[in-house]
Length: 251
Image (cartoon, rainbow, N blue to C red; front, side):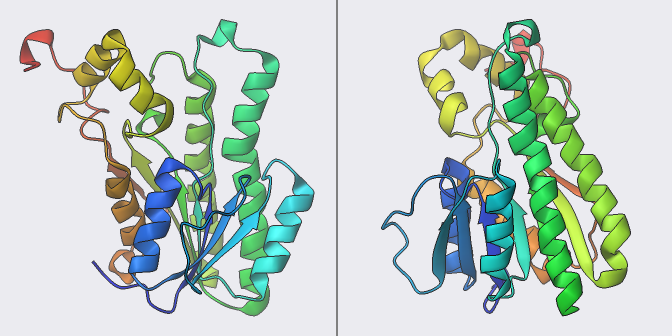
């Protein structure tokens, strides 16, 4: 895997299950990581190449602070990872639930990207954004319609940025993971037999995705190995977006 020594990378949602794997890998590849999360910093990353900014992406004042504080360190890239999911049929979800999912997963990522891109243009520097979408950005999955909508929106945002700012040397791509072994999905997989059976049927490879596998895909999109990619989606979903397997195909 290509080293990322000398790169400074902003990572939103860095305190989450996937975010920690991403941070570990980027640090191991020599990058400097500026972690952004609503949660406070921990002692997990004790290195001079790591800095944490505690911020709420739902607040525009915090977005301004992130852009201002990070500009002095001249970040080369942004990993837009932060996101939430509320599970339940659409008619059972409150208006507040729907708004919070769309706002954090989509609106806040657009608003932060706008500020970071503005800094890159002012400094006449190249930049790279990796948006973390999901296989459900184009395949319906029961109980998470607002989440799917927010991820589908990220696809349009990414492609728009890629088109508008290629002339400035700015790339933007997406990674679309599958069902990752963290958070709610991991809990349901282990505690709810019906969920595990449904998920196994949806995943031809028959297992949840390890967060380190997502991190490796992100590292690839951050590296020069992907230098001719922009506006693209790296689909890493274990085949979940394929047609579901028939029951007799499940071992």
